[in-house]
Every structure is written in C-alpha cells, then in structure tokens.
Picture (tube, rainbow, N blue to C red):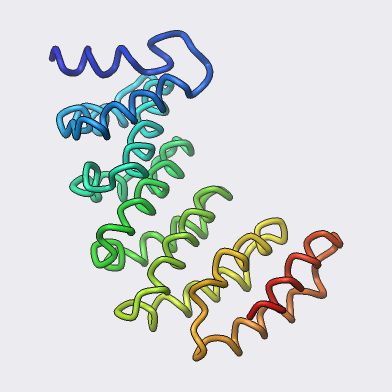
Length: 210
C-alpha cells in the first residue's frame, strides 16, 4: 500500500500538472533504480480509474520500457489486453509498450502478431504507427522476416497517405535484396496517389536509396 501511494503520488495528475514532465521523470527514476515493484504498481493501476491516472500510468510504463524494456517485459500479457481497451490512450500506449518489448523479446511479440495486426487495423493512427514499428523490427530479424514482411507490406499498401512516407522511410533499413522488388513496386504504385508534393519527394528519396 505504501509503495502504491509513493508511486501514484508522483504522477502528473496527482500533482495537478497537465504536462508529461513528472511522468517522464518518474519513468527515468524507475528505470535507473530497476524498480520492479513500482512497475507492478503502475501496471495494476492502468485499469483502475480515474482515467487521468490510467493515462499517466501507461505513459510512465512505456517510457520505462524505452529506457529498460527488461523492467516491463514480464507484463506483456497486460499490454496485449490493453489493445482492445475502450480507452484509446491505453490502447495505443499498450502498443507502444509492446514495441519496446519487441527489442528484447521478439519471439514473445511474434507469437501475438495476429492480435497486434487486428488492433492496428481497428485502432488509432498511433496504434498503427507502433504496430508498424513492431513489424519493422521483426522484419529485420532472420527468424521472423518471412512472416513479418508480408504483414509489413500489407500495412504499407493500406496505410493512410499521411503515414505512408514515414512508414517507407522507417522500413528502408530492413529491406533485404529478396524484398527489394516488392518494396519498390509498392512505393511506385502509391507515389502517384500522393497529393502533396512534399510527400511525393519523400517517397522519391526512399526509392533512390533502395
């Protein structure tokens, strides 16, 4: 109980602050001290109201995951469960945490790709962004590339115009020779659909680098 009070009292909403500075500071503190107990408190309260507290908790958790994914890896099932939560902030926050875990435990993430893709297709722009990040990570690993690339290319084909250039840029470093032709085809086909010149130029730049 004392640990919960200690951790929750440092959240932005508890301090009456609207910015994320307290949450980021708390995440840094937890990561530096490898405070698994604090992580446990935050995970428990992602689904306990008030909503502002939920939002703060998931923010701190994925910031911790970015700094030290080992600290949140054990809560992978919880983050998967958040992908279908009615609170959109928890949904894309959960996907962000999973993207952090993918760096450390790609096999664990790979096992749940169907749920991740389903959430990406139904969720917000940020949810999709983070799912694409996961696919790019897996596509860059030999053990998962054969399954990850078709899913990644599906996302590229069907992504919103605003997101497409960013996805193409992020995917470029993992494009292996065997997948280069399909990648180029997707970029070329979608190039003509780009209404804004700035987006067309970004795609053209990627094509030159392939």
